[in-house]
Amino acid sequence: SQSAFAYVDGVLHAEGVSAVALAERFGTPLFVYSRAALTEAYQAYAKACEGHRACVHVAVKANGNLAVLNVFARLGAGFDIVSGGELARVLAAGGQAKDIVFSGVGKSADEMRQALNAGVKCFNVESIAELDRLNAVAGELGKKAPISLRVNPDVDPKTHPYISTGLKANKFGVAFDEARAAYRAAAALEHLEVVGIDCHIGSQITEIAPYIDALDKVLDLVTQIEADGVRIRHIDVGGGLGITYSSETPPDTGLFVRTLLERIEARGHGHREVFFEPGRSVTGNAGILLTRVEFLKPGAEKNFAIVDAAMNDLARPAMYQAYHAIDPVVPRQDAPRVYDVVGPVCESGDWLGRDRSLAIEPGDLLAIRSAGAYSFAMSSNYNTRPRAAEVMVDGSEIHLVRARETVPELFAGESILPR
Ligand code: LLP
Image 1 (spheres, protein in one colour):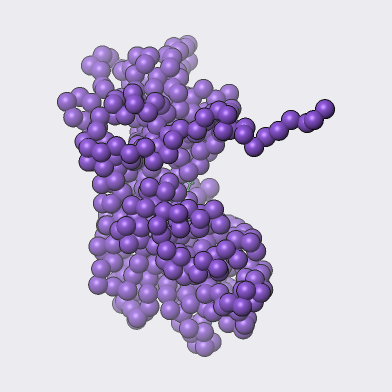
Image 2: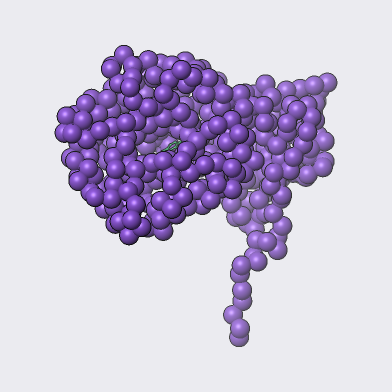
């Protein structure tokens, strides 16, 4: 929760540690995560699942740092992965293959092999073509692949078009009308074992209603699939619960989980296991990005605050016009001015916040909030900018959990022609 990042004597702290001290020791831009905030956000899911046959698979794509994954693994979390790379990360972080579901529209044969050999819990399959490939790969290895089909319930989650995934027009999942036949086809394949059903309707969803709509459609489908003699043991409701970036008011996690579990039970599906795949809601507000003001550049139309973080560190504003709150680490009492907070990258789209009222001077530190999800994970080396360091704070302890990249590392794999 955001309470892990609070002002103490006029200085922003991460748990018991001053953000000024962190920036001085590790430099900026710097991602700072709070172990307490990660734990609290995860436990809200885990606690609400207690007493039910339900479990939580944290979406690695939101934040794949090994220390972050390890905090969740120690709490007993499972994981939702979308690549062989994420599989390797989870295993390196102490997660177990038997607690992993493998999502994604384009799994390669090689990734399937890795996941089958590791022994993942379920493949969330997204097309008929993928069923055939997985069947062939499992056959080669003499294994049976546990599968679920991602069905596309065609509900509008009312979120940004780039992050809504459950509409007919999206590339994800099997069309709802084709799902029953796809299950019959899957059940007939020798090296597959149908174990469940899944859906994911989008991300940053701040209402429960679209989930209930999707769930009701999925439950109807489950009844039809079982009428065809195919057993569905688990229902994976996906991820997507939103967080507060500015004034959004998402439902409380416990309420969200209980509402879905109660609906499933009320509709007579309480004997099935239920999976949740949260990413943003367990990591987003457990991180901030610290950046330093390089220059202030007043202008006729706009004032710019040029900071040392950029779109390569935090792509969300440039990609989705996403809002992240930006606060001074040591607030000044001076009169504020309105700035666009921008980075050094050579693109007009390189902005982090627009029209922000700030009282700042060059050299000041700013905290970009809600940077625990899809932030470092989506960062790049554009403009040959080394990716930022990541630290995790645990009470008064500080752990560097990813060293800042160095420039030589960035082109270490490159070579020039011999002549
Ligand atoms: N499960 C599946 C199958 C997903 O596709 C996703 C996210 C999740 C779980 C986790 O969803 P969450 O709980 O984090 O909403 N880069 C975008 C978000 C893309 C989400 C893609 N899928 C952003 O920065 O807003």
